[in-house]
Picture 1 (tube, rainbow, N blue to C red):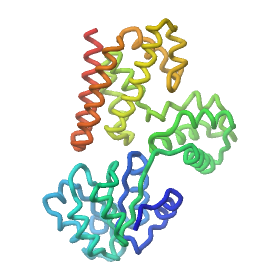
Picture 2 (cartoon, rainbow, N blue to C red; picture 1 turned 30 degrees about the vertical axis):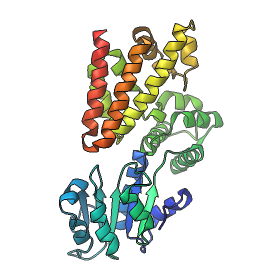
Picture 3 (cartoon, one colour; picture 1 turned 180 degrees about the vertical axis):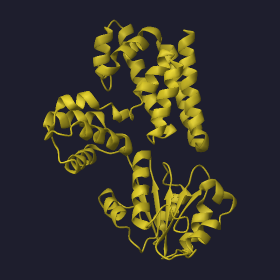
Picture 4 (cartoon, rainbow, N blue to C red; picture 1 turned 90 degrees about the vertical axis):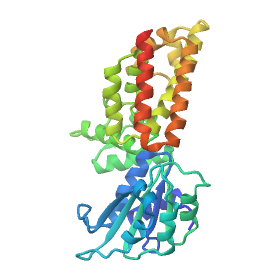
Length: 341
């Protein structure tokens, strides 16, 4: 079975094909991975709180006991009904455990594997794409059409319409992570309850820049040297379901933009002009924080910060279980460097 195309994935998630009881959900959009995994679990088992019907297994547990997965898949529920097993792959190689269940799939149990961004050469991905008993569901960052559908879906659910200029502004502020985008849109619909239509003023009042997954707070705090705010904002980002890798990636993009703006200022442009020409332009809610960073950080130190973040990104890919600690430590190191200046 090859990887499902984007058009077919939502249909499969809503009504999983019983001929493919093994489902691999993977990709760089951690929020979309989580959303689809939750939907698959809901469609596959009657009661997730029933330990006889639904089992969670960490990849680390399978690395030491690869036969456990196939044993769980063939366990008969004590009181009958549907059964499902959720495997969180993590950084461990679980291909041998998955191979066992691929070679002996159970028609009575759905096995859902939650993974990160897997390369095409990954043994786990290759195995599931080739097996007739498995479906591979890639989760890539939403494009403009996907985001429009997401906005329309949430507006219909809340019995609201949205003004064209408000929709255009909202599209520029969401993306990058499905879960974060959906949360921002739902926050907007809650704010607009009692109205018939969402207006541009509502978007400006409510929606943060979710294209960076709302990470501006933690990144701005780090470059301002506000370590307590780094702690608080990092906790918010993690509690929303955002991965450490996504936080660091957003920090790299934003620091690269900050470096570009700093070079513009050093060449004679005003700070205001540099922020307007940023890629993307600085949102008005961040102008004070970005202006402060542009005044205090020289270009060479911004380059060093980018190198630190790039090294952290690589370290997280190599050691995903320690990802949170790595991302947290890196941002605090940047904040401490800002305080020393």
